[in-house]
Length: 114
Length: 115
Image (cartoon, rainbow over the protein chains, first blue to last red):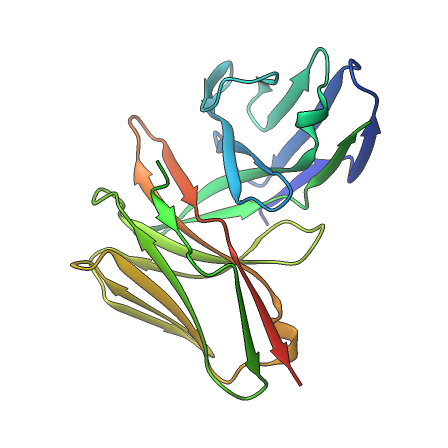
């Protein structure tokens, strides 16, 4: 079966510290992967997407970066966290169902920058 | 520029009645529309989708209606149950080159179903 894993579930980090969130998928190859953020009281904002190893597209200029070191691994990073980086981060994977598409989300990481 | 809009931040209905969640969009290139349900501190879970070539899709208690001329879609939940209480996100997808599709989300509507 196809699954998506995301960790850690919660994280509290001081301002200026680095960040690394990991997302892995199983049961598929060459997936399109996405990082979203939900800030308090706001919708889901697309941050990065990747269509393959080493291929990263950024949607919103910010303090974060993403990497795709392996086919089924997608990493969200920051060298120095800001207070505004707090939020709920979600990894997602797109899959095809016949002629339609679907998205599956990971369980999310609640990041609090203090 | 918000391409997908959910203008009602919240909705409250009685158990057993119909819940109608609305969504408007501006990009005529969207080809699929999806509804997600999200509980606090969890990832969104997929509910139902509709292709832009259809005007209705039904799955159990959930029905999505699409009005392309009005660029409007709605999710109907009948009958509503207390367990349906969650934030509902409308999303739309469009091909953005190569093999990539991107989802654009609305800001969500908090549905509360009262017993």
